[in-house]
Image 1 (cartoon, rainbow, N blue to C red):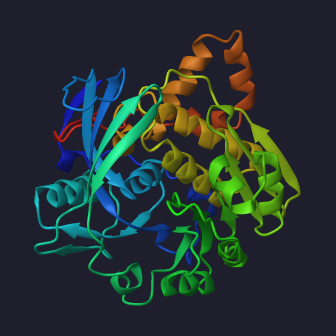
Image 2 (cartoon, rainbow, N blue to C red):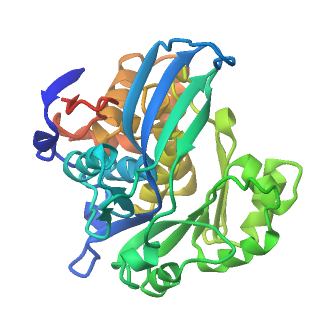
Length: 371
């Protein structure tokens, strides 16, 4: 339900803190560090096919919202993590909208981000067709690296999500030395090389979370399970997502090995689902949950996100998770009974959830959010 909360008013809504029981006097103020490019996303959904040359087609729906690294920043903040983002923002209208939504509506810390005069904000048009998406993007390299944005030293934090690359930025190793747990992700390698020496940097990471295609490409394995085991030899927690089949993982520190299937849903827009999964897995890890619960929670958050339009603003908050849980409890039969057993660990968390707790926002440039 679309409410009448403006962006400014949205900052007063209740935030549930899943790490409250683990915080102490010496806990860092930042839970999660993110860096990268913030895009302004324009998303068209409900397309039956991509347009052919020289034609025009109309979509059933559309949304506009911050994209790129903002997908994960918003997803993490919605889940109660104190999230700090270091990124470049243009001085154009796209940059204005992204900055306002992230800082005022979504309560993402931008103290290490900067606005740059004359720098064009990156823009992506996403076309959602048959539960998949194609994208057209325009952007320029950031005027400053993340290390420069941090002035060489990042804030102390519990965790950081970092792209796994052949050469890690200096701030990444500084963060690790400060006690930050590094969670690795990876972008598509257009060269097709997927250099295996990149995996040597996993010695600095706590967890690595590629999808099946990326994991198999890096490890030269022919199946996701083989890739998972190969990665588990190099990083304490290896996670491989396998789309509609869910996710599998090995935690070498605890000896756990799990595969958790995805929730069957009618996917409307897959934009940002992987970012929701990653943010939720980080949150569950920081909360000290067992591996099966971390995977199932990450699957749940991703499945809730794809049922709405708009990437970052489709990411669920605790209010959306509570709504889903209560819905499952009203029809305790069939597959719902199975889901209630699988997600039983949520019951204590959600029992006293206030009604005004954060819910997803409308995926448009209008300053409205769900009440």
